[in-house]
Length: 487
Image (tube, rainbow, N blue to C red; front, side, top):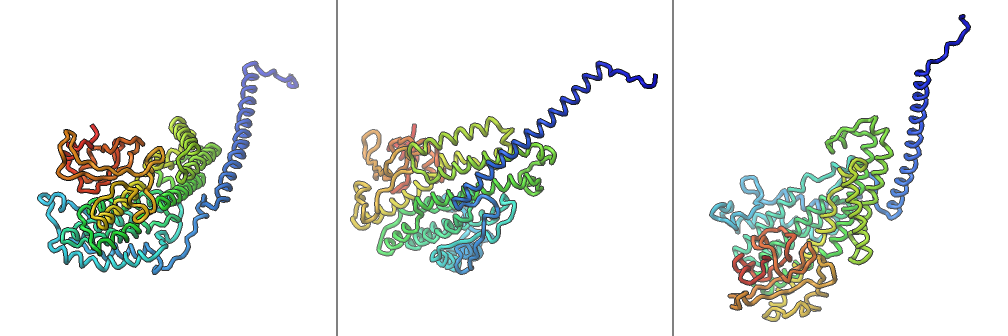
């Protein structure tokens, strides 16, 4: 009959039940996603609010450029110096191969005095920059912040190398005071990257420029016969060196900007901006991004937490509190390595901070502090006619205090060592005098150094102590005879 209702076959009953179950499962997933999204969004909002409460930038809109007139801007005069520095065949002379290997690399300059005279217009710009205290290299913040990497970074490094070359030429023609003055005038190349606008790449570039200057001071200082003019220049050079507090502040501010840059990447990815996708070299499916937004925000919260720990670590003195923070960061890094799928964006935007901060941040501090002590010792020998017996003799006339070793895992000063005899007991032709800081392994090797330290390189080996030579750098054979090379 037409009024009869046909029963649903059993197999279709199960299909209906599966359909209802699937629908309920999808609804449950949507509810879980929305609840999770609300929770992680609240955590993110709180993390951002906490950082802003400290007065630190965390979002792109927090970064503000303060107008600075050219005549008050260190970076403006450094740029002018780059433009006016003399070229040979259209290139800056930024290598010293002619000095180290004259047979293989002929000197491109035929008249040192004339070449150095042509450097004066550029040096005048740097002297003007030395009288200033403010710098501005970024005229406007634009998004993505990932793209704000100055194209002139390599040019500034080339200028530093050209100035290093010029100091070698000054020493060759006997202008010792001029060479010391040239090294002092390299200061603006470091200070032009104002911490308020520097990312980690800018900090690392100025670290490399400062290390280049310090290396040349180490090369030049043993050759300097101090007279009245040189003594004045040495004091000016020492006063122009950066303090440990400067380097700490610079790195901390760079880390703050680096954190803001990472957050900006997260924001642009969530907005599915093609510009940041191209910069990161990845394509993001909009559907997957919408579904996985809670995971992205969770990753952003984890990124902010880790970067904030690094920011705090930079200015923290060694001790139990710092050790706990280091342990927490190691756990964070292990989590990043072992769970890359829910920390995908962090894996891309998080720089290799463990090496930069935990192991290498103290290198430039130790290097600059040893440079300062070496200059003080040179002034002492000028006044007293002999080397000081200990570094304590430099206090208070030449140093306010003997600086501590920032690479050591305990509180200890920079070490001064004199070697007068060979390992077989025979006297050396001339004593070898040097300062040293412990290496990145934080172990005092008693002044024994890695063999790479005898080739005038800037490398800082993970093995052995780091020396600053007060007398001419020994040859590898002389160092072996003196017993200061690691076995």
